[in-house]
Amino acid sequence: MSLALPNPYRIRIKTETDSTNADVLRALSAGEADGLLVWAVRQTQGRGRQGRSWHSLPGASLTFSVLIRPNPAEEAFSGRFTALGALAVIEALKELVGVKGALKWPNDVLLNGKKTAGVLAEAAWQGDQLAGLALGIGVNVSAGSVPEGVPLNFPATNIEKETGIRLEPDTLLSTILQAITALREILPTPEFFRVWEDSLAFKGEWALLRNETGETQRFRLLKLHDDGGLVVEDEAGELQTLYSSELTPSS
Ligand code: BTN
Image 1: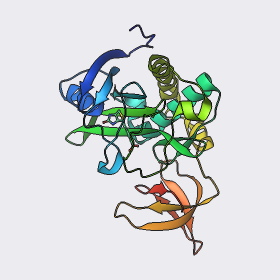
Image 2 (image 1 turned 90 degrees about the horizontal axis):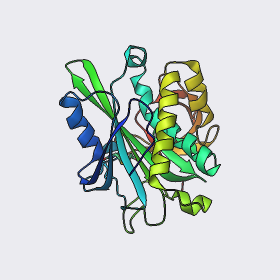
Image 3 (image 1 turned 45 degrees about the vertical axis):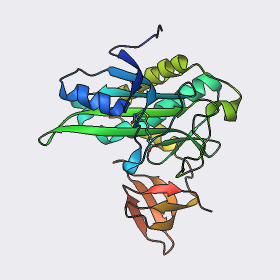
Image 4 (image 1 turned 90 degrees about the vertical axis):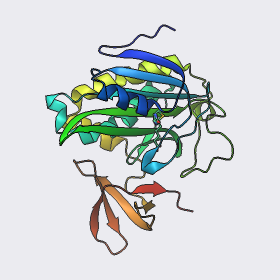
C-alpha cells in the first residue's frame, strides 16, 4: 500500500493488534520518536474513553494511533490533542465529502448529530514529565463499522450512510494526517481555539451530561474554556466549567 504521508510520519500496518493506542504507548516507552503511526485492520481490545471498549469492523472502519512527543511550544497545550484529533477528522470530512461535521465535546465527531468517529488521547509519563501521547482515532467509514448488538453510549452512524460516499481508508488516513500536521502548527494559538469553538456541537442548547460517577444533569452549553473545559449553565442559572463529563442522548 502506498500512502502519501507528510513528514515526520512513518507507518506500521498491522492486520491484527490488541489496540493501536497500546502499540503506540509501548513504542513510546521503547524510545520511538514523534510521528510513528500504527494502523490496524482489526483490534481485539480497542479501547474508548472512560474505560469503554471500541468496536469496529475490518474493512468498514479506520483505526489508527499516532505517537506524539509534544515539542516545547506544544507542551503547555497537550490537553488540546484530543480536540486536535477530532478537528482533523472534521477537516478531512470537509475536504473529502464536503460535509461539516461537529465536535461533541470532548472527543467525538458527529455527522448529522450521530457519532461517526471517536478520539482517545492517552498520556505516558516519566515522573511528572509528559513523555508523549498516543493519539488514537477510530472512524466509522461504511456500513457495519459498528457491529450489531454492541451497547452504544450515543447514537452512531458511518460516513457512507450520511453522505453516500464510500471513502478508501488510505485516502481518509492521509487526509486526516495532513490535517493533524496543519493543526499542530497552530495548536498553541488563538486560531486553534477559534477553529475548535467553531466546531462545537449543541452550542447554546440544553443537553444532558453524565459525569464520571454516572450522574446526569441538564445544562446549557455556553462555550469552551481556553483550557478545554466546557462552560455550561445549570438550571438554576449558575455557571460551571466541566472537565470529565460527556453528553448523552436527551431522550
Ligand atoms: C471513544 O469514542 O471513546 C474513543 C474511541 C477511540 C478509538 C480508537 S481506535 C484506534 C485507537 N486504538 C484504540 O484502542 N482506541 C483508539
